[in-house]
Length: 388
Image (cartoon, rainbow, N blue to C red; front, top):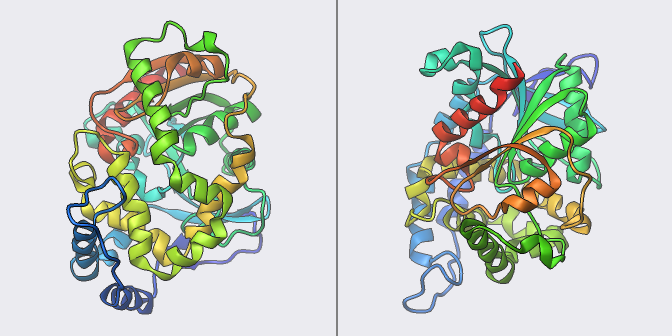
């Protein structure tokens, strides 16, 4: 990684990804020397990533995957770093050719990165070039969450989603954007509404996918749920019973798990690809049936090459104290996009947010920007038209 310094840490500094070749050579050597565990005969995905599947994917990562090709694609986007609240933050900033485009800050989650947005930045910033209406153009700002990817190392503790939202408000102000929208999924679906809560004078609207909704304990709020909401509630309960191991570990012992994930590329690969299996479109048999292998591996490679398994996990650790607690109802107009596998329950979303736009889709999943970029872009465009 390289950057050009300026006289002020607060002034955005141009940034270009440039991974040393020695790091790529080391990755391939480590993959070749993997110490594989045993596996019970006939094992599927129930207890974790199957051995045969992971061996094949790791071999592809070592011999066929081309980091340099995707590094070059990422470097086609203008990138910068700046210091926000004492933390060095990396961000992509693509201005639309349409001068009156609406600024939009988009936030990824875990185990995501700005790699998630590679296929939506173009259509958002230059819709005319992608078969859309120039009037729907956005100036896009896509930061890497503190401690994730190129926003590392963490300067200190305390980086929960509220603090991230405060940093994003400062970033948009610093870029000269005083009227803007916010979009996000996963962690971004928490950060973006919080940004609306703390900066409602400037945030015109919030669009989220994979919005987490949690019952308060009052049985009345779960009466009369639609069939779709009942299914999502059942999935939320299943997540708590059977799919939350990664969250429990990362919210309690992020430093301990970081040693294994930072030292073993196959460990890092398994930790992330399991989520691409469990969270992508339920109709997909394998992760790469929902998101291409190369794009998955680019996301995993960002974690590996920046050594951010532990620092990224800390966002769970910092946020665990407030999980499920009620927040002030957001005053900002909010759009909710629901993709297959989401656990977003509409009455609970409307309890916490000023929901003025609701859309449900039959394809895609948790990683909507990667799985169904056309649907996500179309919904974002539709929602924000009212604020132009």
